Image (cartoon, rainbow, N blue to C red):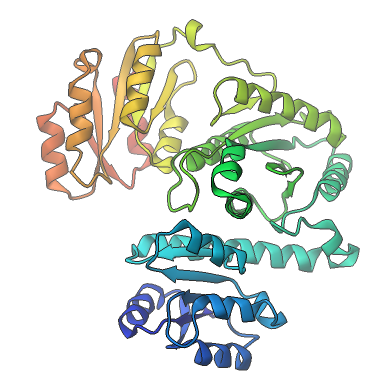
Length: 431
């Protein structure tokens, strides 16, 4: 059975568009004004799971509805995503201050609307699960009220319980810290800072299992204890994926300069107390900060310093975390894998690289100009002329295929990228 979505907008066209987008995911209810919306919410209080709310409506605005929501216990627990035609930061802050969970700007992109709703719903479900599972030991006292994650004391208590009850297993501890968070507070205000914390908390929690312990232990610091990892590579890829998401922020309402630094360590079937494990992970977090932020470091694993890293290089020109993650999984660790998302990063990385470049993956699958500007950036670099280039194109896009071949692509693969095809291409050019 589908969850139920209430769409509140005075524009019939907008309601129809949203109904088309979500009709296969939700049972849809709709209201054309604030009064009607409140009547529906009160009548169906147990059955509405999420509300899409237009901010600018006659008679009763979305902000007025959010204010009324604060006084209605049954409404406060229903996630609300506001829809607005305003790009003004002040309007967004006002909406968040009145309790909105996220916002979408008109005209909206369907994929972004779906992503925002999915993110909010995943967070809401996780909080509900925590409340149900932890009810017997006074959950509210053990949660961080801003994010719905466990607070510092509870995180330590639950982590110790897992470490001591299954000491033979290998558990992974992640410590996350928001990069450049002080700038957000100083330039955009504490409301924007609080919303940044909530979004990142939701992101971190959504990447792990409900059985893993996710907590907020300080202002902009989080930890996750991942219980019983069967392979260290699973945890490593998890850390790298989260770093990638925060670096490029696909469909996330976050300031552009915000990223995450991560420290990672493993209990190795030996460490049975949280404080010891946290100290190790925190040392790695410091190392990530020291090395330039937006990266993860693992306890006991020394990465070559840039000035001494003479390994041969594989370049990935992509902002897609799934593509980067899959390539990461097939490239041997004896090679230096370098992920590049912008022209500036390409310039900087090429100046710093010491090893010879053996292969390039050029992802143009989501480029509006079919990849023309990315190929131009490559063409300008003499050091890349003779490097084999595998173009990653949108399946069936003949313009992308044609341009890639004109620009000297050695090979072409299509998205969605299949790991077996990627492995064969990788082996072919890196033998």
